[in-house]
Length: 337
View 1 (cartoon, rainbow, N blue to C red):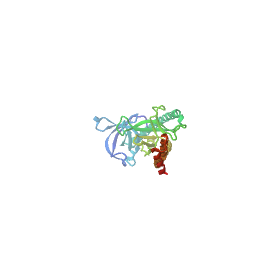
View 2 (cartoon, rainbow, N blue to C red; view 1 turned 30 degrees about the vertical axis):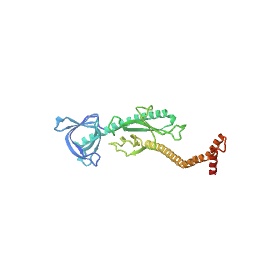
View 3 (cartoon, one colour; view 1 turned 60 degrees about the vertical axis):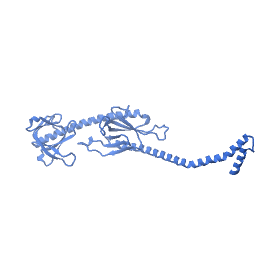
View 4 (tube, one colour; view 1 turned 90 degrees about the vertical axis):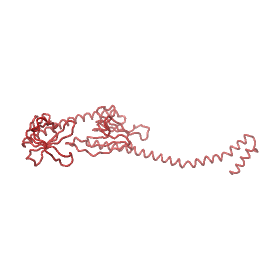
């Protein structure tokens, strides 16, 4: 294990990659010779030989280093760094001796160990916060008996950003709600609620009704930059037709699988309810169409059958069975007979 530093390496040659990263094996072109310095915080700076007027060039914070096989007898390392506000950078560094290269490799191991310890501590603290949030959500929604899944991150459109930009909206737990057990509705509403650590269980970050028009699709897993644990285990696209699109990620694949199963079960229930309602509406429509001729016939028959009775009643009101009304009624009855 290397000491805390700082470390100075003289007579090193730094090369930079050509082309775009991730497109086949990287090739390098020599940049400059000079002096490399690694401080206590594992930040790299480079003094270009013969260019003192340029000052030190910052190469970023050391992430990892790996040996390059069959190159200069173990004197060359591929070094990955990360600067503030930028992604990882890759450099190929040839040292003056294999001993210097080994010291640099030990520094990289120390940096990775320190990074892992910090990550592990942060993950433990986050797990404790999520457990507390999950308990608070269950207590707040206990009347609805929610299904809660932790280790979730919700991404969506940035309200103040450019079109298509996506930002983290909340990190915490997801709750799936069924209709109340004593609801008068036959099916009711199934809901999905996202709770973040900032707002806690008092107010969800986002809330949607689960319906047939909602789409949940698993996305291909993105490759992590240098550690697979950095990338989410599973990511989903959650979209509503003609509505907003969100990305839901999970740190744990089992939690993601349980959430997907619970979501799809409730979506199928809503789809079946909608299909049943559509069939009932279609059946009622066909019945109404069949009923129309019978209604028309009954109305006409009622008029025909009631007309003689009305005319006889009118004749009776006039107190005569031989008047014009009585004669018309008699003729109509004889015709219908």
